[in-house]
Amino acid sequence: MLIWIIIISLLLVGLALTIVELFFIPGTTVVGLLGLIFSIAGIIVSYNQLGASTARYILGGMLIVSTVALVVSFRTGAWSKFSLKSSIDSKVNEGMLATISVGDEGITLSNLRPVGKAEFNQKAYEVKTTGSYIESGGKVKITQIELHQIVVEPLK
Image 1 (cartoon, rainbow, N blue to C red):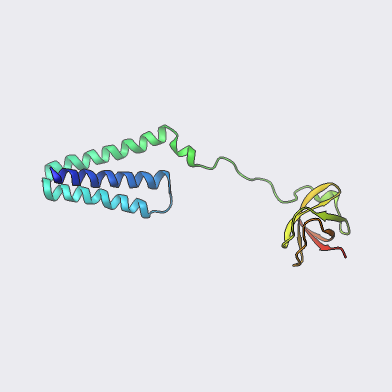
Image 2 (cartoon, rainbow, N blue to C red):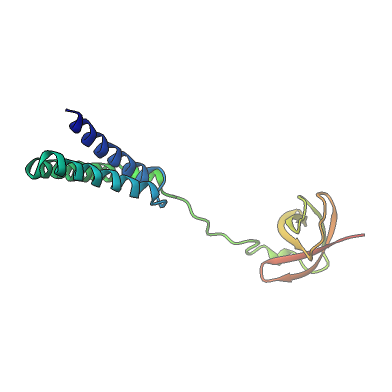
């Protein structure tokens, strides 16, 4: 009776660790490998202690239970709860640079260390400095515009 408890425990722990790997911490492989090791240990113990014919039933049952668990998880949409559904398709300051030019003055909306937000012509832009830190509320001037980057310097 004790050997059955050991075998069932090994198989259940192996299955549980495999499910944890698939659903809760995918990509770590450590938990999945531990689940595989526990499952294989359960099968090996059953072959050694119960004989080949009984162990084949246990192996078949384990394969069926694992397959059913995977099929059910796919059909119920459990995987969709863990997938990213949104994507970022915008770019920094895209299409907004037509309203500003070099020499415009504005005010910082956040600390620039060295990147942050500043307001020019009542619009907020992501800006960067040449390396200096500028506190929020400081006055800045645009020194250059490269592609989608606005470089500013503090006004004295």
